Image (cartoon, rainbow, N blue to C red; front, side, top):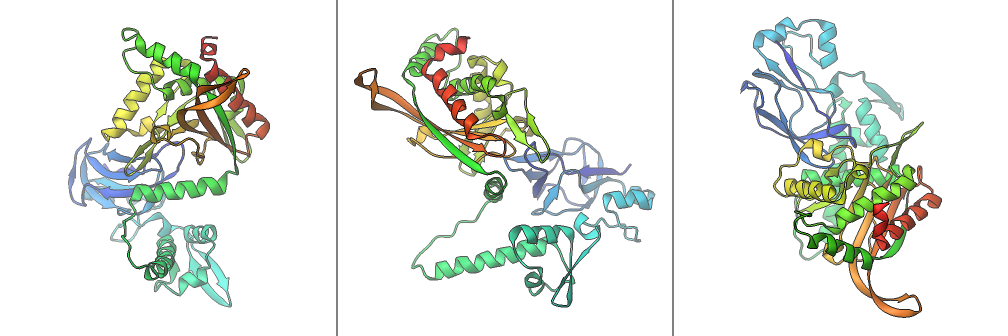
Length: 405
């Protein structure tokens, strides 16, 4: 039986992934559960297991290429299976050539080619290449001068962009006396691409608020003092998550995503917590925060962070976020802004808690102050919603007993 291995889904926020590494080669015997290859999503590096047994007959996309969800990336079976699968319609659907060799061709090569006409000269380019050139604002005729093949493909666009970027970098480096070069990791490239896409796609606006955390600090200390009732240490992130879910009850549009014709408002509040690692940022998700107690949130967060640090995070742990919290307070950062984690509509940047002199009543006193800065997608959330949403967060954090109601 011929088994088609498809590119799996990498989560809610992307429909394409990079193949980082093939762990098996053509001709290898494959058992169920074997790790076939590794992919990189916009959030993490994941391993893909085989659901089939047999020989690895074909690898359609080598490591390093970006592949859309659902595209055939490999075939597993026996040699005779390819011959049996000679139905032209079936082969066309998965990209198998109907020539004698029965080789699989990358999707980009088998789709209908489009023609660009410039200055009386025909330039052949695949639809993927044409689309990418338009996004990057480069001319196909400029790319055509750098390639030897008759048809411009997506890989040619990427190579052209790389060469163009390298030229600029070398101009800068040649003007410098000394420098160190650091290779850009695949996950860092993905982060850069996702951040660029988010800023170009969603019109961000930012609102900031200072919050008196004195009562929340006392509230947290009281919770953690009861070791029997609270087996795990409650963090400020745990409390902030619960407060955010409480505020979303009043402003449900915050917990949404924008589509071209509809705004989807999620019933469950699934909060992602950005965790910084040396290789980049991972955002594991705690689901149904609106239905969980602070203790349950704390347990979920602790498990997620342990998985990230031990490289045991799974695809399921990263899926389904509806709003994200990024906390740099542990680094002594008082204030910062964050870029929205698409396709969400809001991200909250949390600063450090520090003692400051403030006016409290008619006196100047020392209080524990923390800043929260919200970045909002203006396509969905107007300032008239974003501002009172942050005010609601401040109200509950300054009066944590409101969590009981």
